[in-house]
Length: 234
Length: 288
Ligand SMILES: Nc1ncnc2c1ncn2[C@@H]1O[C@H](COP(=O)(O)OP(=O)(O)OP(=O)(O)O)[C@@H](O)[C@H]1O
Ligand SMILES: [Mg+2]
Image (cartoon, rainbow over all chains, first blue to last red; front, side, top):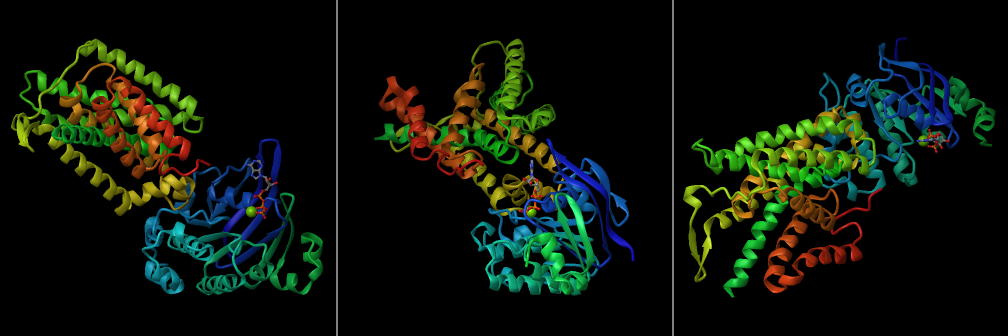
C-alpha cells in the first residue's frame, strides 16, 4: 500500500512544553485512521503541525511522498491537505456558497459544488445564508464542504462531533461514511469513539504527545481493555 | 434655513471624503490587525500629487491627477507593506511607532518640496462654478464631491459584500489562517489590501484638495479624524466606518455653525459618548 501521509519522528515544543514527543504515523491511500486520546494530549497540535498552523520542532512529514515539513499553510493546502479544524473556524460573514467556493479546486471526478450540495442538502437550501447565523451542526457541514471542495488527498477532521446534538452526530456519521465509500483518505480525531470506530480502518491512541497504541479497528473493537487502559473508559 | 441645508451638504461632503480615507484604515486594521499611522501622510501625498500636476505647466487638471494619485498611493502602500511586514506579529504599539516614523519622514520630505504654504488646486474647469440651490448659491464642486463620494462608498460596499474578492477579504478579517488553509497566499492578500487602502487614501487626497486646502498638518489632522471615525464605527467594520464618517462630517460642520467655541471638543465628546455606551464602537465586535 502506498502512503498518502507519512509522519516521521515529529516533535513539537511550544515554549517550555514538549507537546509532541516523536510521533510516527502513516495513512494509506484511501485509508481512514482514527486518532483517539484524552483531552490535552496533543491531538489537535499534531493536526495543526501537519496543516502548517504551527511549526514542528523536529522530524518530518510527507504528503504523497512530498516533504512538506516547515512549509507555509497555503503551500501545504495546495499540496493536497485540507482540515476541518476543532471548533470549525468558519467564516461568519460569508454565505454558505461563498465559503464553499472560496478555495474550491477542480479535480477530475472530484468534488464539485453540486456534489457537495447533494451530499449536504441542508446547505443547498441555505446557500445564501450567512454561516455565522447557522446552527452548530450546519456550521460543521459547511466546514466539511469547504474542505471537500479543496479536493484534498487527505482530509484532517478534528473532533467534528464536538458540541453537536446526538441526532446531528448521526447525520455526521452518515456523511462521513459517504466520504469513506468515495475513497477519500481520512485522519480523524474524535472523542466520540463510536463515530471514529465506525469510520476507521485503523486506530491510533495518543497520550502525552506519543502514540501509545496502534491496531486495526477490529482489534480495538474486540478488546475493550485497550480503551480502558489508554482512555480511562470502562 | 438654507444655512442649515448648506451646512448639512458640507458635512455630507466632508463625511464622504472622510469615509474614502478611513475605509482603507479600517480594512487594514480588520484584515491585517495593523495600525497604519502613515495613512494620513498618504492622503496628503495624494493632495500634493494634485497640487503638482495642476500647478506646473503640465496642462493637466484634477481629473488627470486621479489615476496618477491612485498609482502613487498603491506604490506607497506596497512599499509600506514590505516595511511593516517584519512587524506584523508584533503588537500595535510597535507597528504604530514604525508607521508614525514614516509619517514624520514623509512630512519632512514634503516640506522640502512644497514648503509650508496652503495650496488649493482648482476644481476641473467645468465644475468650477456655483449653482442655484434652494434660493442660495452653492459651489458645484462640493455637490460633485458628494456624488463621487456616494459612488465610491457604494463601490466599496459592492466589492466587499458582493464579489469574490470581497469574500476573500471578509474571510481574512475573521480568520487568516483558515484563508491560507484553503490555499490562498495571505501575504499577497495583505500586500494588496495595503496597496488598495493607500490608493483610496490618495484618491481622497485628490478629490478633497480643492476643498480642504493641501498643507503640512493635513496628514495628522486627517489621521486623527480617520481614527476617530473607525473608533466610533468599530475597528475593522466598513459599515461602522461609513456611519462614523458621516457622523463626524456633520458634527464638524454643524459644530462650527452652532457652537464655534466648542467645535473641537464636540468631536471627541461624541466619540466619548459612543464609547461609553458601545465600548467596541457602533458596529465593532469585541476584540479577542
Ligand atoms: N499555544 C500553546 N502554548 C502552550 N501550550 C499549548 C498551546 N496550545 C496548546 N497547548 C498545550 O498543548 C497540549 C496539547 O493541546 P491540544 O490542543 O493539542 O490537545 P488535544 O489532544 O487536541 O485536546 P482536546 O481533546 O481537548 O482537543 C495541552 O496541554 C495544551 O495546554
Ligand atoms: Mg483538540
